[in-house]
Length: 123
Image (cartoon, rainbow, N blue to C red; front, top):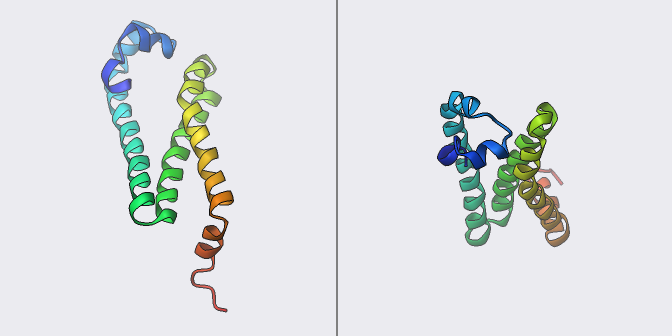
């Protein structure tokens, strides 16, 4: 959205922003859009690593990517009251993903966390 349609009426309405403000922040938004794309790619790579190589590494990549997305939405929600609606839209899916990933780590793979934390322990 930020890289492709920042100055469109729909995007401006989503972020409660004037046409002038959108024009003034167009370059920043273009960069931000690609930043978000790279976070999404991190999550996608995490899924591939989870399925084809290492569940622990894949979960870590997915959790870090979605956690970063949620943290950015939370920061927007806290610091910009006029953009809370956009923050909720931005953060809802990452929040659900974080919850699902933590549930997966604790419920489905309870030994995974213990196994990873015991690596290097002298017994």
